[in-house]
Length: 127
Image (cartoon, rainbow, N blue to C red):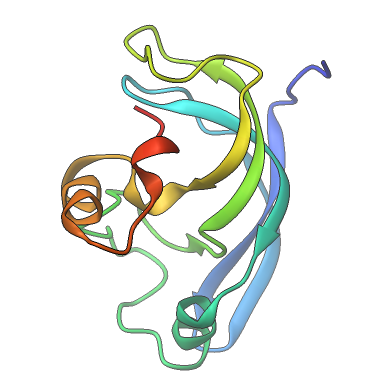
């Protein structure tokens, strides 16, 4: 397995129709999370909508569902391999491969996802 670097590339929305491929620090592992080496990423209709009609300011705004400050990484539907697991995570092992969704792993987003009859992320969540 390759060693993780301290930086990665991320497609981030900086403003209306302002996507940039930025070099950013690799996020630190937090309780209840896993780190996934992305091998494939899709751009869906909601990503396109955020690009053309952003509902929130991209830079300097803390998103209420994911708790992160913009600019926001685009592409929340991806697949890859788990390379690191927080100490409190028991449902996912290092080396697990699968589809993941970063938007339904913690807090209010996870509760909303779990309540959705169309969401299948309960088997692919990171916590």
